[in-house]
Length: 180
Length: 358
Image: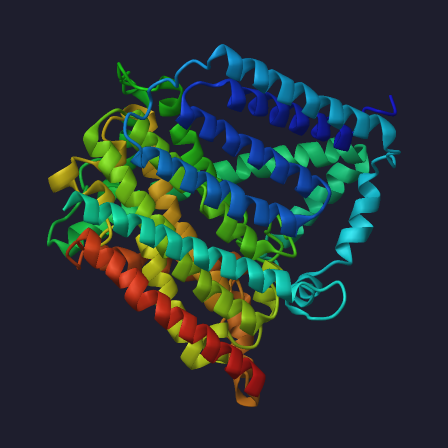
């Protein structure tokens, strides 16, 4: 009965939820339903982070992925014409190529899983690691310029986002002129 | 302090842990806390709806409900029973799954935020080191429910209402978040307990009067807009969209949206209380001559302080709702992106300088 601890049960419930909705997400033919399933997957992953006592990452997961990206997905889908229609069936060639890609991905994952020597998961140890990691440390690491600090990537990603916004505006502007 | 509920909670916890193994005690406590929170959620919703009906009647020179029970206080119970018994209308040619899931998403977002509030001394369900960030993150989930409800009802009014609501919630979340971050700079912590304990001698709104007051006002405006209530109620503008995203819902499904809307109003007031008005901390004057006054204030239990402050802010919100005319969608977005956002960003800078100097 050693396996049947509370944290293991919670872990199994969370992983079954994540896997179930993950499979549902890729097999569903209606795009808006897929987005909803994706939301549940991301929610479950946030639950896993919480189980590891990594509250900051869980909150970021909720805020950025579940609250931000899924909302943007749904928003974008609602703006598309003909939404709710089932997507067209894939051609035979596409299905075969997809199957090959999927199986090679699976093979890669399996090789990695069997070759890697996993440390036994111990959620009580996670507490002592993450309880020492407070918000000040995360903030300093994000905004520092020393070794193992991330100011440059942080700023570079903000430039990338700015470029995306400007690009989006330009694309929207071109469409506007076409309509005139 | 015999009136505090802290000791009752401690007693229950000790009783459970002494007679049961750790996991069983924890499981029972989780369920108990969840049931208690759900009960509080429903009771608060009833109280808020009653208050709204009475107060809005006063604003319009009416009496409000006055037939059932003393001062019409049992009218709400009657309405609750009615809404529970009503038929749930099924819509043909709609996405059934999303139609039924959407209401739960809307109410889960609201309930999870509600659970993160601290109602009094020792009355906190969760206490992360990132508590206030968690509140900001989880409160943004409700918008998914609204968008899905609007789309899956297969009705042009609901879709327009949902799109408006989505645009409104996403944009006002920004200035609400930034004004809370402004206060986090002052508090120096994201932990809700730390934020409340930091206000023991003076509430944050008195600790940094200028930037905190600006942030407070911006948070109230943005938070009010996030609840989709009037002057910002154009997602459900009844004259143009019948009822917006919940047009097609009936019975208890509509009731869920209704509950979430009223509780969101309370949650906004509760978060504003926690961050700006000292949470459950009593009003203290930090001076030698005021020790008697402080002592008297300490006798009022902490949950009364919290509820009192939160309900004063709710009253403010009702006042605004029944006084101002509705905005147009372009005015609404103009207010957020060109007025509130720049002010709150600038205010954050002022707060940072303030913290560095004082």
